[in-house]
Amino acid sequence: MGQTYTISIVKGISIIKYTSNPTLENVLQAMDELGYEESTFHRIWDMSNVDIAMTSDDMRVIARHSSQLVRPDLKSAMIASSDHDFGMLRVYEGYREGLNGVLMVFRDFNEAWRWIHN
Image (cartoon, rainbow, N blue to C red; front, side):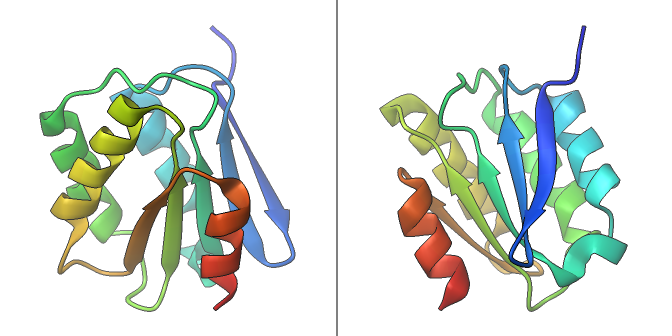
């Protein structure tokens, strides 16, 4: 199976765009690929064109993993378009509360982009 996401740097922001449905394994892989070294860049995780078929337990694992890789001042925006996917990302946001970094969930890329820049 090919790569399920792309990572690009645009104006100092790491943009992780999923091109097929994310799994626990490839979300962890993307986080590891970005690593702590790349954490000088704020991040936008764009999952607006895929279906998130992960569980709340998967979201907990991802939150724990990301807390080891994220600086306290890092901002991450996550984008989902469907109600279900937005809800799953809000579950993740809840698990991330109180851990390193600041996370917000959005439905629109432009809204996420504006928030990252404020």
